[in-house]
Length: 196
Image (tube, rainbow, N blue to C red; front, top):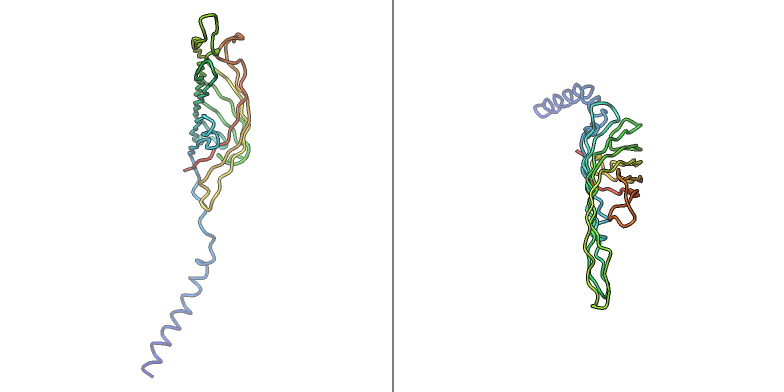
């Protein structure tokens, strides 16, 4: 009888606790905390001499985000007669709208304003005295652009970000044929990063 009394007490306690524990166990797991910021880099472009990174923050107005990005491209030109290195650098501010009103997920449309700086060389100059490097020329101008992209947040906590996009940028000044800058640039985006 002395052993039966503690067992009966434990069984009664379990029966009384079951109605309270069942609703707690049936609750769905907590949803991931909403993300407000994201950073990323274009990892696939690194082997080609292009470094590109971006930062975005979701604005209090649903679906809108603001970002800043930059790119640095170096191209080595090797020839039998000369050796040169061309460089392009961009910095831009972006305003984005996500129609699904969930930042960093789904389609987004954006406008950008930035600055593009370019330095290049025409290559070698050859005459009767031999060949030598042509002088390098540099040029800087403001740009404006448009961008359409699609983003995913992956993983159980939805923190890993992948984004793809296409667009175009226009140099906001007249560009001549021999200038280092171009009038219009295609714009592409493949970004991997984290949202927090």
